[in-house]
Image (cartoon, rainbow over all chains, first blue to last red; front, side, top):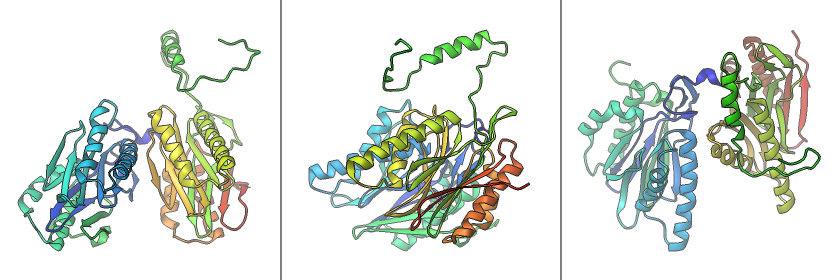
Length: 217
Length: 234
């Protein structure tokens, strides 16, 4: 497989991605594209799943090395599950984000993965946290990450409003992801969204031909 | 060092003792490069169909420009209901699949249950991730179990992807062209076998590192697993 591996930052399969999470009135939407690449030039999967369920109402999306991200989320799932059994209560979103942060920070020399954690809990409602490559953890009302996010900072800063409705928020997320996928070569495929509210979790998949078209397409 | 007449069980963990020797050798050799490990230069493919999974592989093993083995077996037995195709370093794919197969057999005997494909994948992923890409094994693992028909790919760094069809190895792009064109979900057995055979055929025709014969392996829900060798007609 050497011919696929050019001079690239990430060894092996990279998710080279666009991921985001946005809170709205009553819930949070977490979304991603679905492309996995090797060496920045070969698309190894058009349908990779980057939205990992850590607990019933907590999801995270992954960026960076696919192998590292899958290993970290496996460990995080276990830790969270054990934590919630001990506490006899569903874990807080903050707890999930902290578990990911611990793993990323303590092993920052070996790992190359970043995460956005989003979910709903009874204490604080819908929340979004981002854990970056080196293990920094911050909470934001909405956040974007991955290689494709650089192209949509302007769009999201201009268009985000606090306390949107679910439909407005869904359209905001789809538009943002579409714009990023349109400009970033390592993001693409379909748009995966997960809508998390007090009631539960809903998956939305928007295939390529149903994505909104912008002026130059 | 034990006597050559006494069998000693190997110490656990990865032994980097030879890394120092290789570095010294590189200094001594003319071109300054250590000899390259044998790679299978392969085309392997897998397809999920209505009643199970079909895996296919070519049978050529190359050592640089020479065909070292014309009838190399690249489809490895893991369990009665799970088989695995391997691309990459020949020794690594062989040993990794052997280890996996032994572990799953012990598990079956201890628990009295048939192994599931996800379990095989988890074991492979843990092991390959632990060795950080030093084990050069690109594997396609397919099988049927009580939860359905599954096809997975595992990369050398430990990334896993679950797919309905896939090809790997140096001939993967040629085979992928055939698969992308003709794959449909829930195909019948003959259609699926033909598709895999044609995909490997494309790999053999368009890749110098693949050739000779095509091995096909079916894992099926109702019948037994059968490994079939198709004589490739030129």
